[in-house]
Amino acid sequence: MNKNWRMKAATSFTTGKKSAVGSLGMIVTNNPLGSAAGAQMFAAGGNAIDAAVASLFALTVVEPMMVGIFGAGMSTLRLSGGDFAFINNYTVAPAAASPDMYETVSDSWPDYQTVADRANDVGPLAVGVPGTLKGWCQALASYGTLSLQDVMQPAIGYAERGYRATRYLSGIIRMAAADIARYPETAKIYMPGGEPLQSGEVVLHPEYADTLKLVAKEGPDVLYAGELGAAAVDYLQEVGGLITRDDLRNYRTVTADVIRGSYRGYEIVGPPPPTAGGVHVVEMLNILEEYDVEEMGFGGADSIHLLAEVLKIGFEDRNKYTGDPAFVDVPVEMLIDKKFADKRRAEIDLATARNVNTAYTRESDHTTHLTAADAAGNVIAATHTIHNVFGSKVTVPGTGMLLNNTMNIFDPHPGTANSIQPGKRVTSSMSPIIVQKDGEPAFAIGLVGGTRIFPTALQAIVNLIDHGMTAQEAVEAPRIWTLGEDLEMEMGVAEKIRSDLTKRGHNIKEMKVIGGGIGAISFADDEMTGASCWRADGTPIGLAGGMARPATRFKV
Image (cartoon, rainbow, N blue to C red; front, side, top):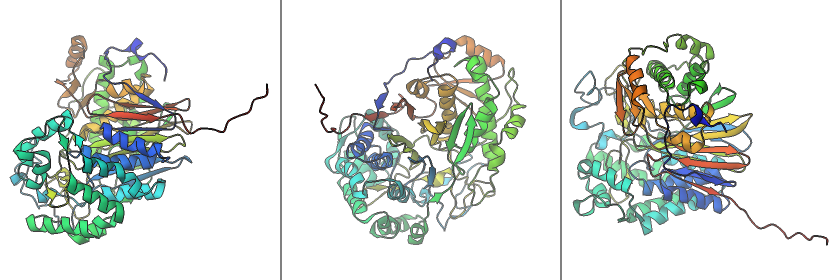
């Protein structure tokens, strides 16, 4: 990946951040304190999984609007011996949920997913049965080296001693202030005195510190079969929620085989359904493989047009085929077969945009992602969420524990593949992906951004493989996104290129930001380079050096 991509770039840009380099460990999260927690585990002799789990717990404190122990997510892992693992700890619909549990207000967009009183968005009826705590503890117990108490210490410290609110956190609190204000237990932390926290203010969270100490002492069963879960269920039942103690007791993570594909000699390894991040990224790369994307150059009219047409196909097939495999027969082998890509490629006209308008279930742009790796070859890409900012906005009294609003991702109308059913997981766009070359890690990526996640992951992979960008350039490069109606483009594309695309039938919509912060790690020459982009508070931290070696006596 040492080509000078700028030689064939039609669109130029300047990176806003610097990458980090390490030889022993690398952690990239969307918050400096989140990354610091992982780096602390590396310094203590832990591996990449220890670092990732420590960072995730820390992020529930310092990035509380994005992730929590009562949330959802998934992780793709490469183990030191070269094997892969995948853990799906997404939420499921409660046993009492039903396809018609919400009163819908429209059968067409833009209000298709809106329901009366926003009950699937804010409040107790929006809460799904959580999976994050069980999934994180499973990853640590199966593949980590440190204890749960060890990896939770940074998070406990941040909650107990406090941290300073970032401008990013402060801005999101202001954005969600009206909903937060409806729930006093949430407002007392993030809107003390009725006003949103300001950037630089110290945030103390003593009740949540006690909750984390309880989890560290008793493990995940304290939520799924113990007093923490009982407190959550009793409160939800009191205020109109559906989750029961049986729902928590019966929750199971899902482990499954990863999705594998190939692209120009690289092996693409990603998550299986119900997320689109593995199947449809591989499918779209298969379509692109027969084009000379490198020769088209980055950011030119031809390359943007081609990407846009491929994204349309990815969304069409996601909506047609992908769902929870426990409820829907997903034709994975067909979708990732290169012969299927040949058929779909035949529908692309390099001179004219296809006229499609793909409806989709709305996903929140607000999630967190981390990527971690160590010198032994352990790599983890993990994407986790409580869905919208601050989830349902509901905090269980006395615990400081925010609850998700992942029921909002289901189709609130009966009779579709993504309609609500008890125990069902929703289709997601999460894309924790690890890419190998000749059996060794080449890079690992993931990001936040709802339905813009897997299209952006695709573009980052193309930036790295076809355009020869560095990890930092690849994550910060301008992005596009489309479902067919509008072609969204981040600002900075030349007018000549925009005019060319308009002539081909694209309706250009200029955007400040498409998708969220990517966390990437690339591997070369026994070093790891970590990169995060300007779109979030992302911070890579690498560990190098090492312990002292015995002195050597030299002959004179």
